[in-house]
Length: 118
Image (cartoon, rainbow, N blue to C red):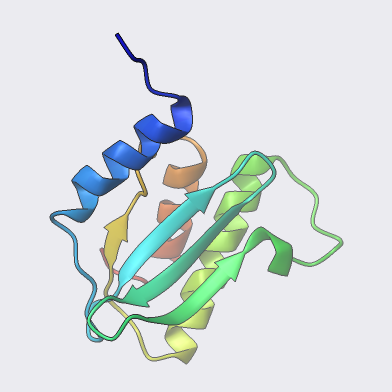
């Protein structure tokens, strides 16, 4: 009997979610990647295979202080700003196989507060 590693289980969940979710130019996919150190998100047009806007914890100011959930919220607000510059208002949320909880939820709520609709 083989067991999956944590990464393999997440990738399996992500494939299951991606069967149903597609991003277009009008409504791109908001893809989230979470690591132990930080979080990053990007808006992807799957039809053209292009990233339209992105934000990462690396792009936050060096003076940023806070825990990982606050970091995720700041990345969500930054992504919403970058999306508005690119002229994007509505998106499809792709949680990337992660639970909608903690940092992923904080990023999503901050992006909604920033003006993205999903």
